[in-house]
Length: 257
Ligand code: NDP
Ligand code: 8X3
Image (cartoon, rainbow, N blue to C red; front, side, top):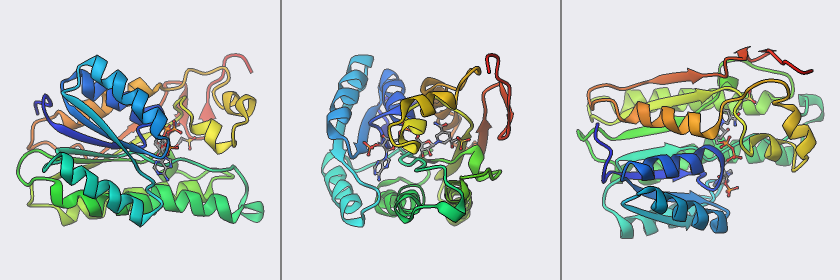
């Protein structure tokens, strides 16, 4: 599908995959609409998307953990465009790496709110703007963590498993509308993900990628573009993408440690 002049909404566009996607879709001449809580960051990302060639780049405060914020974002969006061709539900992340025995309510609640309820809230609010039979696409960010559990990640794995179920339910519910729905499920990718998980501890965060070559945010943005630019009759339901060094969630080849 030709993406030029299409309207692309990206949640969690202030860093990582979302920011890279804003620039990559911008470079294809799309209209990009960006949401996240750090509006100063969105302003810079929008400027970069414009420099890359975006037809337009606009942004608005969005906290997917709040229904009121999602509804305010949707109301603003309706003043900007009558159509959303691609919705990228990307906002989310992990908080902490505690075992269930020592897990913190605040971490659990933040993960459920952003990755799980946020995905539902944004999709519900924007569905009325997504056209039928026009090759539109709802692309949800899952994870290899939704396919296999690991220690300290009961809730993060749980919410990413829920993302797969939500994606599959939506795919069934929207069958016959021509709206495509798919999940992009990456393995280790170096963004602000680990920094957020470890609450700003940069040495702990960089250790996650020690001695191996992780995916980059640009690798993921390129994959998003590949998924949504297939012809309208082709729906990529699910993509698992991992670094070559990561054969499985627990099996990462490290050169220097
Ligand atoms: P980053 O931490 O770099 O980006 C996360 C983005 O999500 C930020 O823009 C952040 O914006 C936004 N976000 C978080 N919570 C909220 C919220 N409540 N409301 C609105 N926006 C929010 O990480 P990534 O780019 O790596 O992560 C993007 C997605 O990819 C996440 O869903 C993550 O779980 C998933 N993922 C990441 C992998 C990785 O290894 N990096 C692998 C597999 C999946 P702000 O703080 O400004 O609101
Ligand atoms: C992020 C990938 O393996 O760190 O979803 O959980 S992992």
